[in-house]
Image (cartoon, rainbow over all chains, first blue to last red; front, top):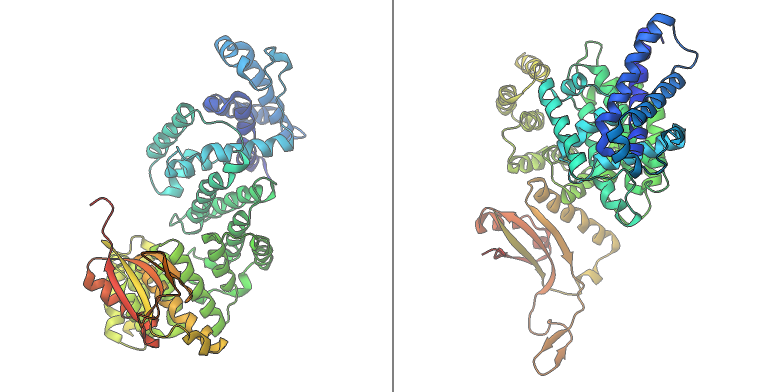
Length: 410
Length: 116
């Protein structure tokens, strides 16, 4: 890695670790102070390393500087010392003795606790994702704005409000008690799921960013899967789902950065190692008596790793979608279920079922119907493709639909 | 949208006993597909439950009888709750119910909302 890449890379990996450890020490109400200390540390790194060259161990350098800055802060901020130091967990008021523990164990614990703090039920869902990206994944406001396709000011305001909430709601940096952990985990998993989806289905043109979002979501989920208090079957199911999806990452995009639909993907580009991991975590998830939507989605994703169409494959996928929809409705699941129905029960039945879906304002609905009417009714295919073109939102989608219309008109 | 209780009745309580395991298995898919189709329209409230055919009926004066089968020809087999815009729509949706394939019936009843 060259010098230009080193600082952004370290920022991504270390920002969250140091911030989490400092927040655990100070209390999360001092999150902005903690972030300032870490940002200052990186600023100093950029200046010093630029002048004097890289230290032998850049991470250790960052930790030492951050520790000293944290101690300085505790020493010099009299108000802070008076008001807070007495409340510090190791309530020793002598700042010289305060241990800033940047061991791997404490880093992992602090990040897990941070995850639960950010995904507290009192923080709005939208803010949870932004906060996670910002604090747990070390993403800057620019990148978050890019991922959400909105402007920086919006994201900035959203983050400020969310951090204010962390303060005012008196949220603690701790793992919830065993009795509450399943309930609280649900919110955490929803956020990680959305984080992953944000990357996987993002319409942002920045493909590196998309992949980073997915990798970060997987890293955080893995952290839960490896902790003895949080390694529930549902966590394993979500991790399995992420492994199966990301196994197709390389195949989903052609050399021009355009989406390649599943049917047209080159399966040689599927990552078999991730498929194996997906199966591993799905097996681990297959205990207990709770069937979550992640279990069902992971099982659907598992079947999609078999490229060859068999009656068993589509019948299984159809039944999994039937159960998924009974558990929780979503328009995408309804459309995918109808596609599976066409594969399992035939196109005529699927068309009849599709007409009942009240999704006429979605371009995906019309694309599905155009697909189902192929070989049945040419005029309907054309009608639905034109509707889809009208409703499609992004240029890439529009381009793909136009391509289909052109192919079709020949 | 209003909620509707769909009550499934079938005529012969022992008809399952006359069926082979394969036949019973083949009954499964139409139910799954029918419920899945309602859920895909975002109109499923609960898939509900299926009921065992054994039961007791308690009447005034501590009179307990073995099941309601003596007086009523059709046996209550289960229930599902759906959402629909009108009784007509709920009725239309019930026409796909697999119980009709084995000579059963679906009773469609609007549920009175709690806040009324």
